[in-house]
Amino acid sequence: MKSENATPTGEFTGEFVLRLSATRRGARLARLLAVQQLHDWDVPDPDAAALVVAELANNAATHGRVPGRDFEVRMERGEDHVRIEVSDTRGEREPVPVAVRDEGGYGLLLVSALASAWGVKARCVGKTVWATVPCRAVRTPS
Image (cartoon, rainbow, N blue to C red; front, top):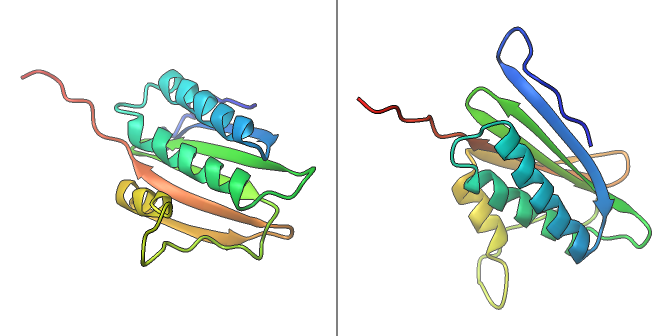
């Protein structure tokens, strides 16, 4: 786990990286630790970013799982957004939002609704699913 303070430019205020086992427990721990980091960064209304982390980590543990391999969560805090990246080792299984919903398939629709942008990028081994979640401005009383 890595956490940094603000840089002099103010454009980038921190990075958080962790690697976890590709299990349900690992996905749950990713969400819990990400929520703590979002609070440490004083992200206003961190719920959207927490939900995106939870969904992408769950997808990595469920659909991107290779026995014996971990997944990685990376968050970067900008002035007005949080960039979330979740990497796993199953490059051949890219996420696709489902057209017809059955028992599942709502996760990427949720990610699309909460993120200003999201996508997939290939890695040497596996893939990274990323999302940029805007941070709401803190309202000050008039």
